[in-house]
Length: 215
Image (cartoon, rainbow, N blue to C red; front, side, top):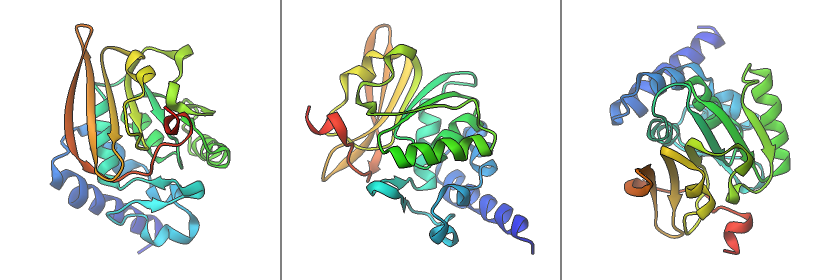
């Protein structure tokens, strides 16, 4: 079996056993998860574990999330193709690629300069040139580009950053892990000018750094 065939088999198994079997039903998300080779987004020393059912460490104390969690967050954030999505916490760029493959126009912010630069180059090399990125603290979102149809946060603050709620469009969805010792993944939706909240599932994310620590 060639390396390409091995990758395809691992991707297919990941999607069927880790994601679809746990209830992710969006065709766009399942196709995206099966199209983006996760091993290209993890450190080279960990590529043998790229399709494990777990997060993996990155530079600066960050992580690439468990594939199932990436799929859940993508499905929760998207309301059809062509939506404008802000990602807070680019990491390796994997979540950005999945969002883009699922049909979103993606803007992403990363606070760790080395990770931001590496992810930008990786996404461009893989053909995701339409993903727009910047280096900085995403606590206040990206006000110049607001409003957003979806916002995905990949690190956990202990409260919802007010600016992110303010930057949601009508019908927009914010998917964010909240908490310190005990964390849950939350979905906040703007409906008729009001914010409606829902707990999705227990999770474990690295803490959000920067201004989130001071607020």
